[in-house]
Length: 309
Image 1: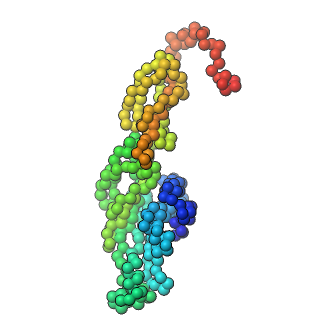
Image 2: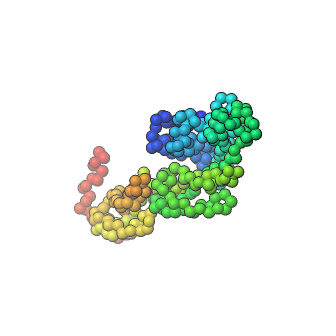
Image 3: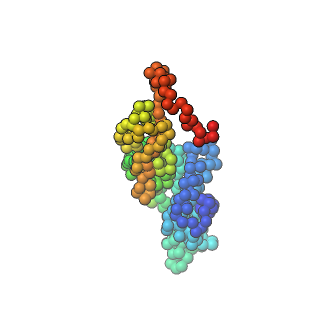
């Protein structure tokens, strides 16, 4: 595996925000759902995820920077030491994710063998004859499709893991933005206990809401009389309908703002809902046609003059 900094394309001195930003960008580009016919992208996705797991852990990152562990998070053996065990990965898991098994071993075993006492059974400290420590079970990656409204409101979700285990997840702004959620001890069984699970949230598209950054966009049809005279109308939001005031004299394209009705941010605030009014005219209305035919007061005005035509 390549250097995790190189894998994510960040400098060694990069802060947490830069590392997270780089990971999100790569994870979106390489996600298996977007690259179903590209095995190379799937393999790259697993490398990027493993690199982020290491660099997002302050302790592991410090150990790697000091040269104490390798790119897979395993202790580096001194020259000639024969203990080994590279991480192994295989595609699979619920939802087409990836699983990883971590190699065993720790620094206590290495230094005990090198600096006095040796290992039980007379193992040569430079020969690797010692007994390998048991490994934890494999990590498992899951993908969870979440309804648009639930993602915006951070509503708890229930997910069924391998073996039929059911877990209730409390969504976070980071998870909705694409950062995998880690569930300790929810991976596969192993001699040293269960591995972990990661859950990547995928926000499902909506039939009339659209996401724009942290804001939610909505095109709202209104009648001609509501636009001309003004009205109070019901408008849907991600957390239920509200009453919205349409100012008198509104035209199609006028945008109204509903504060705090968008997606949650990491700092606890929320985006807004931006409502674009769309005047909806009835087809084949004879009364309206006659009114327009006899309405001469506005005939000379050119509403397109600002466009130079």
